[in-house]
Image (cartoon, rainbow, N blue to C red; front, side, top):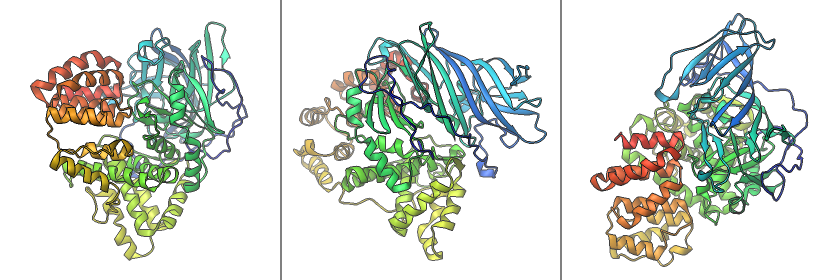
Length: 634
């Protein structure tokens, strides 16, 4: 999502499977010499999630040549790897999880010996793939991804909006890409890559690299699509999607892909994206990836968004009709600097990606939508932190920003506490100084991995002025200790003053606010999230009828309504929950609703069991794994 080169030239080529408003951008100019990123060797940069030994031999470039077989739901082909090895190194270790290897050769076609080690199921680590180099610097691996590759979700036509063509998307974070790409699957081992992907007509393929020219018609009912990512990225950011999708331009370097029946709503929802890119550049420097395009995927996508470079993947559940959930777009865009440009070397430091990005997101929201909305969204984040600390304890080790990787990605700690850390630093040193520091952090570590220790040291050297300021900032407490430091810069207490008065009025007298329909989405969520936990059926019915909760087009609000209804065993909401869980695969919504049903014992568990029996196979592996734990009582 960030890149040093100027925007690449656009070739207007008609390639979508149905009529599109404007052809998608492509590039055919010669690619610059490949960059090679450094490898960090300090103890805190050692990644326990990989088998790789990059200081001995590492992958610097991956070239994929892949065929997508929708009938068999299999992907197969070759991966050609460029290897940089230390003097005397005689083998390289890759990550693999279920890959079916046919043969491995060098650039001359000479077969190389290899061994797949013992499988480690826990955490999806998989097995080491050790290859004898015998002097080779290029490896060609012929293989097939397993039928149940966790990174790939094959959707039947019935699971798409159009109901005619199948769909495929990948999701690599954190270590899922080893189920379809044989490489060193660690965020600290950055690699350039290219790909040639064939798919049946009339499907289009997009990837997290710049498309090269027009698709090649192979004459057998298939087309080949070619992509290049000429800047080194962590392997989890290699991504693809294929389906019946159209493209619409937003600005000179921005656009959106979606299924034909979704494209108009998607385009309207993300119409501010070019303005967001401009705002982001004013804050922290040039957007370094050329294009910033997005694809709105079918509802089975397990996350809100995934920051794949040049092609952000988005859930359709963010579409509200009024751009009220566009903080999601701002977040994924901000990753073009924090996460993609500078990446955590290990997953225990994922706050370096997510916390910095969440702070940056809020600054973009402020620039594009105004300070009131930014402060309200910050207040919601702060409430998430307090709720999490109340649940797990303020001294729980997992509430430190830098951890051993034990907390789940997406927690209020990595994202929201990380953001409030930077808000606090900004408040103490001043925005001008802080912005200059953060910009130089991105510039000086561009296309490189980083650790929390590096971040702390850079702050001490390039930001902090004097011992008194160092004490006031409490940097080590924020990064390496649990809980919320005493110097936290709390959000504006008046941000939700009207809403909080309405909550008090409802709690004391049952008064439903007449102003609700005119509130921002953040205000509406604040109100619903702070209502009394115990409500009667009559109260729930009145709230629904007056506020239109069942019919809201905002899925964030719809989720809060359904969660509240289930917590109070409100039978009229069960069909709504059934429909919602049958349509949506976003883990943020799905897992908590099943959790509430499970917690409701004899009332909720039969409902959860019935719904999950029919929806489980439609969920992505990430969502499915989370709900499986719920249904197992974990």
